[in-house]
Length: 370
Image (cartoon, rainbow, N blue to C red; front, side, top):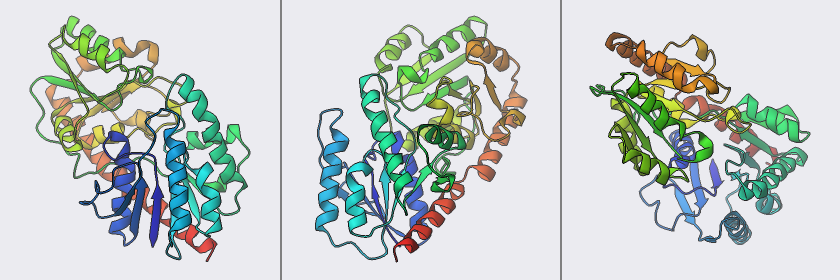
């Protein structure tokens, strides 16, 4: 089956992991993928999918609009194979859906997260997100992919939409790329992803500092980019146990995680993070890492309270509870918890658990207009 995947995400950052992993799984199951996104034409030549790249505006706030208009023209002017199904990011569907329906191409809305930005840009994005789901609700054929039950409840609190419009596609992990190896001698805590202030990352240097003051020998590694990067970099210059790295290739991230002990989830209990399904959570487990973070639905695995290798605590107790837990860990416990985390990932977090419901959804959609 031919799948047209319209996305505003580039493939040069952590956020592209989901779409590339899902695409590889679908390709391995015999489907063909054609990605259409803002990457330059030719950048995907080494990948097993077809690719069309579009230039877009450099002005924040206009990027999705200009991209969607170019994609709309592409749909209008190209012959599209019968039986094709489109997957479309929520940022783009308002411009694309009428053209898709004119060509009788069934489509699926892909929503991996509501607007994650803050400030004025977020105020501009929320109406676009809400409009996207209103289009799904009114369409006789369209459906949408979400990451969690909480995500569905948020959407249904905003608009009237039937529950049968949703399919939950949780974040998985590449169990070959992310692996567990011999851990470093020094206890190492890691956070990787966006280094944005509203993600709680500025609490992490203080966690490390208080832990060191309490007598714990450790290292904190922060990897990524964002509006807190410069501040974190400045902090790291004063403390030799804090290391801040720019965004890097996934293989390099996976290598660091494989040798580290503890993965951090500092995102606060807000409307956005409480419905999330963060990729890093699964990548930590697959790397044989224990997990420590703030306790809310977005960070929890099903029955996560029963997993001794995972510790989630109230936000106001984040630092002290983290230090108290780390102090209970000895080499034997760390080794056992590492094995348990990896075993959990192998059983519960394979991308197959996400690919199979997505494939069923695609096949069901392909039959609607046939």
